[in-house]
Image 1 (cartoon, rainbow, N blue to C red):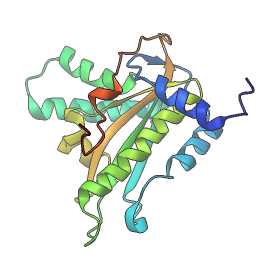
Image 2 (image 1 turned 180 degrees about the vertical axis):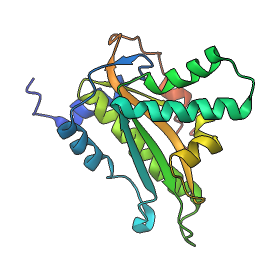
Image 3 (image 1 turned 180 degrees about the horizontal axis):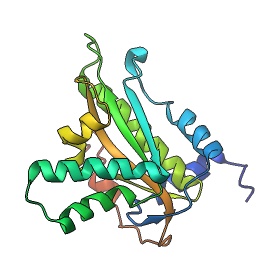
Length: 196
């Protein structure tokens, strides 16, 4: 079958195969591909066109600065943390060649609650991950304590109306054939009202 004959069907197949890859290595997608992905990823539901998001792209040696913030958070929580603990925190910024930090930038609006703005921002991050996968790379969306750490948020320059929704780690999967867990559609989708 011609791959261009039914792009919608091909898209659905790719979407159904997407999975997270926690082990990532070089290379990351090149700048031209990333620019195209980033631009396309912004086509999400966005009530009142608030564009309630911003994203930080951290790659190469700049990941060490993020690692420093992770160490700062570690020491803030436990001033007696040993070298091994701090080094483990630092290495978490080096788990992939590229990291995109998704930040919800909330705007006070009578028709658009913060939850809707957060969901729109999450949709952009999801689009990035899906596009990354469709281009033969891998990603994993991480949150955890660093997403709410005052040290990390301050170090990344977040304002009081902003929140980290996730760190999207991007690169080449170390194990590209990572198995998918089975999902049953009927466990989550039900027609309503129920027919008897």
